Length: 56
Image (cartoon, rainbow, N blue to C red; front, side, top):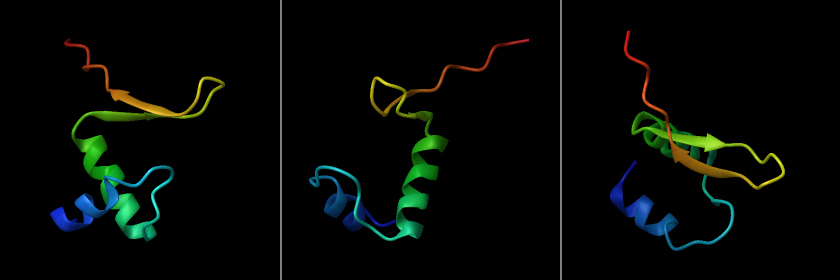
C-alpha cells in the first residue's frame, strides 16, 4: 500500500471508501503492528493494542 493511498484515506470520516484489496491490506498491516479490531458490542466498534503474549 502506498503512502499516497494512506494520505488519501486519513482525512476521511466514516467507513473507508476504498476497494476491498486496499482495505484488507490496511487491516493486515495494522494487525501485524499489534492493533486489534474490536467488534461493536453495545459500546461501539473500535481498536486497541493487542495484549502481549504470555511468557512461558
